[in-house]
Length: 331
Ligand SMILES: Nc1nc2c(ncn2[C@@H]2O[C@H](COP(=O)(O)OP(=O)(O)OP(=O)(O)O)[C@@H](O)[C@H]2O)c(=O)[nH]1
Image (spheres, helix red, strand yellow):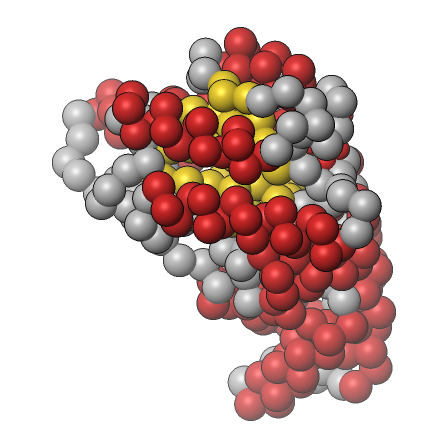
């Protein structure tokens, strides 16, 4: 089985030697295992309630759907997404003559997967490098940490990478990114604290062009004095990126802290309106029972979750995969 992700497949379909096949299977098992581990708290929160509510063997009735609705809300799937899912289940249960709680659970899994799949898409690197990726989001969500992890990820994919420290607002952000640069071996371009973030971006893109770097990851500030100021700064950075590379920034990743649940969704709305977000990185999935937010993001914002953060170490980053997520959530 191939795991298709936004940045290609974890196991492609080319013919393999037996030992390569075994290695790819191990990778796939490891990947599913890590995703399952990451959603442990969400699963534990859901499964006891689901087991109790869906243990019946008879035709589905309205009170079953009401119970299910309450359970989905506790996992932070959100009211509008939950209402949509329950509506689809009501219709399908009737049409398909569902006669047990376990069959209803299967439909639920299918519906959640389909919401997630609807917004997934595979991204190809631009024909003219570098691929410019802006990391945006409110402070403390994990932008700097994720920039560091992503730098290591792209490097591991044999794509030369450059980090740009454009969070000149928070005193420690530049030093923090320098530490990630040392850990991953990915160079960082910076300016002084309090300096102009666009100047750092300018220098980084200039260096990337000269060095023929393939990916530039830009860590931006999460907080300015006003929302308008933050958005104006992001706008300026977009214009600079476009001047250097046609079509840049190619990706704008909004970093959301999963533990903030529905508040994260609210932040996401704000950023998607003004920052041209193309995908979500959901951090701290390891520490929350609110993993259902992934489904709300896909349904309400029509944005894919691209990566999830599952800890503080360099390889605690997973490419998001809907099948692994749904399996992890329910099994
Ligand atoms: N458990 C866990 N912790 C994380 C994860 N990602 C980031 N963190 C932690 O979250 C905290 C904040 O991360 P930062 O990367 O500094 O956040 P930031 O968005 O850059 O913050 P600002 O620069 O203030 O905007 C740090 O302690 C990180 O180690 C994750 O996936 N899991």
